[in-house]
Length: 169
Length: 142
Image 1 (cartoon, one colour):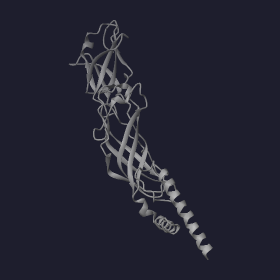
Image 2 (tube, chains in turn yellow, red; image 1 turned 180 degrees about the horizontal axis):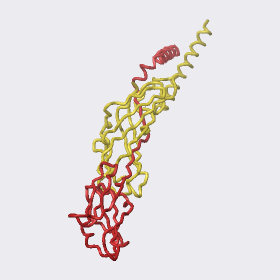
Image 3 (spheres, one colour; image 1 turned 120 degrees about the horizontal axis):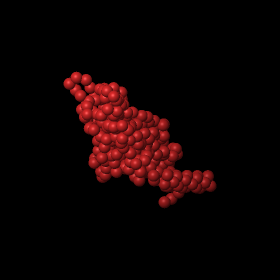
Image 4 (tube, chains in turn yellow, blue; image 1 turned 30 degrees about the vertical axis):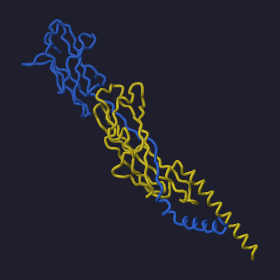
């Protein structure tokens, strides 16, 4: 009996050590996901997947000198749980023809660029269902083409690299 | 910490894992990627026509149909005389233009016209040219 008890305690010790190790590994794997992640969460669940932002199905193609456009985006969530995307935390833009139409021909909304402390709060918040769910959001009035933009800016594509933050719902 | 207490801690951890919804509530999430906007390609007016003016109006009267781009603010009218380099006559917002100076055309002259839609600093390429001439010996616009 005493041997059995000792063996049982050793088994618990091994189990405890394994869980602690798993927590530490989990903390590393979630480092990208969140700097505030708690080490006690989701052990034994699948690895968290970063949400993916892409263009909406039919992006606007109507920018011209003096015109201001919204930017629509789609967020895909491959995690098992829903996520609320609440704030834009980073934005940059590139032109499909930086020689004929550099991005200096564009002006980003002063509400968004530079990004406010704590991020630009999305209204409404974008809630994305888990399991590969998608949802769309809009950055209203994000970009204006300057009135001085030349003919080289006709028919060009401007790609915005966006970073958002949010919370699990 | 004794092995027994570690065992208790492990048991508690196992319980918390059984309630992932509670644990996940403290997580934040990030999302990243790209989205795009494109600029349009300006479209010109169509159906440019040149008519020899009759009656009170003299010269050449140009007419055309508006660009499908509602934001177009005007049209640049250019004229070439006898194949010379085109020159800008005017920029107009209307869909017609009267080249009154054409009434002074000489016998044998040919006047050719184009239009180009504009908005701010953008412009389309000139349209296909339309022409009128004053063939000798009569020198009447045809």
